[in-house]
Length: 379
Image 1 (cartoon, rainbow, N blue to C red):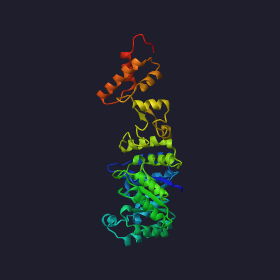
Image 2 (tube, helix red, strand yellow; image 1 turned 45 degrees about the horizontal axis):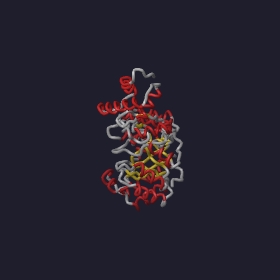
Image 3 (spheres, rainbow, N blue to C red; image 1 turned 30 degrees about the vertical axis):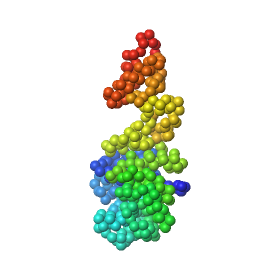
Image 4 (cartoon, rainbow, N blue to C red; image 1 turned 180 degrees about the horizontal axis):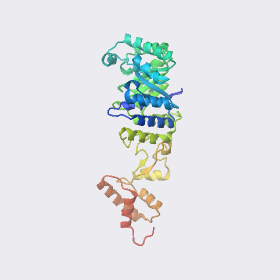
């Protein structure tokens, strides 16, 4: 059971922007930050100072304007990176370090002895400056379990405020990720953060498993953007926790659809219409049986009301529509109809939607209606 305090942290502006081919301008990043804060997000991983250039300009602007959220600066395992982040005015930093043999050897060309020494050095320096220090165990899925526990104990004793357990290439099952989190929290009192990638479509499941195993913090991005298959989606994580687990993280859910649309527009990455929570089809209904049920009771075929996430319900006129939707539309426009008119309208709607391979608008239905309506019928 998730019966302890948990903290959502958004990394759209760091991990999200690492989506291949994606970049945000400094103005766009500030806008996304501001909208995240408006939605009630309290922790934001803001970017990577070591990138320099426009990234630094944006980070300076962000620090200068201030934020109601705790801002995290991401750093490589390099002292100069950490020094620069603190010099920019960040009060909280993250240090990215790998712990698996394959990453240590092939990504940074170091060994475990170096890792433990460097981690202690960087934590000691940042804590001497009064910073909140987060540190990674990257590629945790391929990290030796006993070494992970040793690493967790060492970074905790060095003063780290939390340990990020990153399933860097998304290879873990929920059972495996939960066991890894449990192995850390049972051996060391350091708070743990979940960072789960979606390569097998298990990011959200792994996140929930990690929280259930005792993790405190967790990472999300708007629309689940990020490297390769992305990572845990903010709206999905928030709504699952709120509606299915009874955990309200204090976000303003009515902002979620607009936030998704903003990032979709600025990133140029269009969301599939069936994307959970904020997809354009989530509250769309075409099937005759579904629409008939919805018109009687909106709980019939919707798990939650669209107003919870700032969405809107729509009924679609197409091949699978039934007479109930046509009657509903005609009634709401004060148009006369009987069973004969409904049958003929439905036949035409289905035929035309198949030919044009898209739904019909209300106006197209009205054109059909006026062609078949008895001349002596009144509206």
